[in-house]
Image (tube, rainbow, N blue to C red; front, side, top):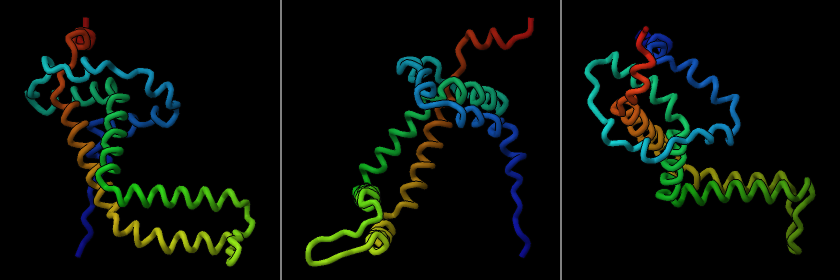
Length: 176
């Protein structure tokens, strides 16, 4: 069988996705969330309309993904928190692994002496691994991540597609 080759670059070049995320890497969290748009502007139902054609979809997405990028990041974080709260086993495993690694790190390479038993850092990491991997597989993290990606994509791209650009931006795009 021949391999199916999907030209990702050709698909993403129409939406200008490559250069869209370059600025995200270089900004700090304080500057990233400094330009949050007000909730009233983000949920302005008067500006919701169906796009007429694909070029209008592209235009709206290019504008809204840049304009509301901080709001979309907050929306993604809220969906991630929701997904963890609705999957308590995964939340427990994450807290267990983080707490275990923090506790083992606080030992500073010394052995843990509990009075009747002594364990090296290597043994503690192995025990944490043996406990966390089966629990982590049972918690279905892949399903949660796929749900998070799908829910974020539908919500963010749906908003970016159906939210019309403000009238001021329409006038600024026209050539004089």
